Length: 445
Length: 59
Image 1 (spheres, rainbow over the protein chains, first blue to last red):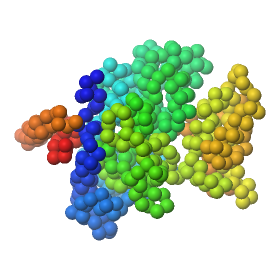
Image 2: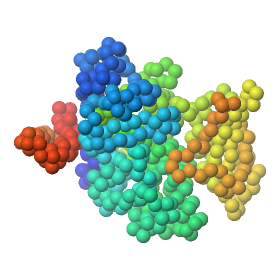
Image 3: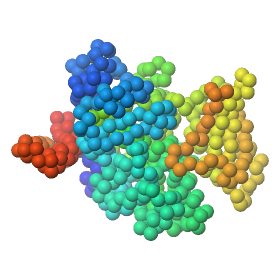
Image 4: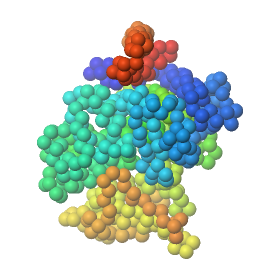
């Protein structure tokens, strides 16, 4: 393959790290100035902090810029200019599309984009899809409900941009989507990990279709949940579909900021479009190396209508120690997004990331894809229950052996003991989009 | 990597497209079919700036 064909943009994607930093600093200065001059919200925030555009000369200066939290966005929305509030940098007439967050952590946040920002969304997606091997001969099936959530809208427009044929599988039900994929010989799809596994299950049980043999999907981009970077979940998806699965992480209020490339070495941060900083959770100090995980603070460097500057995303991430063989100089994250600061919680005094439980459950082939974790309080003590399902007809369906394996692996991965409940296949809830498998009920008791 | 590509020359062409599109909008007398399509051209031009023009002084 010619060098130029390996990248969406070889000029930017292979910039030496010091040049990339120079570009990020220049872009941060521009977006800061733009927001300071055009958004009442940002002007107030920065004036109160005593920072003006001319003060941003180094990365150290950037770290003095106040962070933005979701609660601040919620506080201004619903006011003029309605419904976004005064974070907007453009008149309402320049806003061409509305989306909102799912509201998983509270009141949904409204997000305005101009036509230029929507091009920017498509650009970021085109870059990531190209890195995952999508080309103009691909027929990409998008089995998601086209609605107010940004979800895979960006995939649609990004794929169009790089020349793919996009099949919008919007209001079809799961069976109809699978049959349409088969009929059209779709080569790729994008969905949440939960839905990728759920579709495979439906195909086998209800349609007697084995996705790996009877369908032609060979590339899957997953987003919306952590599963794409959980090795056992990724393995299950790849085996079920006979396809390569690539992770992508983005967010409504941020953009499409990271992706796995075809080398599957970890999540690349698109450092030409985003500045990612990792903060120590306790001290707030910036972590620049791969030695420890921390909380992400992110800036979308080119998003203009409703800017995202030093947004405290609460995502827990860690820089990877290695460079990717793909030749991109965009840095890698180790283990993808490990969790959200909101989700990583102390149980029995131990810090627990729910993705660790997922990794254990899905590494045991006798268990189904579904599981549920309940954290409760018995008196003063935390109590944690893991519910799993047995796959029917497994030759090694020896519950005691599986129980021993679970106890052992959970202890190693999470350092906790669990009450284990085994359920019949199909007994636990199924989810179509984002799953809610971790339920911390302690505050409600 | 950038040295293998005509970044500076491409950036000049991007600027020329931007200027031509803006001039077109300036003489449109408010014809929506012109103005709105120029808006879209300019949004695409911005993506070219992100990909090429922003790099000129750096690469």
